[in-house]
Image 1 (spheres, rainbow, N blue to C red):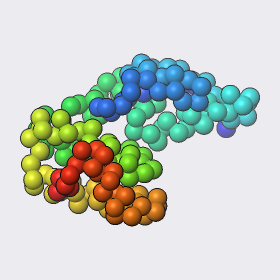
Image 2 (image 1 turned 90 degrees about the vertical axis):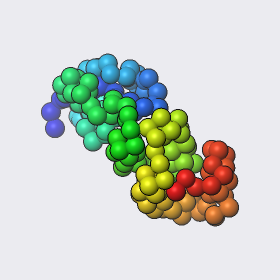
Image 3 (image 1 turned 30 degrees about the vertical axis):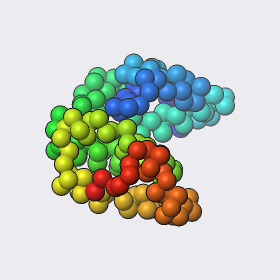
Length: 163
């Protein structure tokens, strides 16, 4: 593979940090940064080349034309229940969760937004059908019993499931 040079722009979601550190680089939100890599070069150049390739498949980064980052639907704040459902589906599908704690925590961070968008029982029922299988898979992978999972919900302020 030849040497590569690409512009990478970090595009955070609603509750994501304003910068990320990745492979020795600090990427500020919505600020393009040129990264040069070489798969056959030094260890840093190899790491940079891998970073560029990884960023291409990551929804939180735009590789190439930085103007695409400004048009990203991730920057749009949902305004109603319908747009919140789409927003929910996007983060549920695109974000990587390794534990039930991370998944429930991500859902809990949206409480104010859910209220603002007037998300109702029918919306929560639909979201629950998508959320619960993912949560179940994570709980199994982490060997969590139902009581442990219930404790995670409670720790995030849920005394009953929203669906």
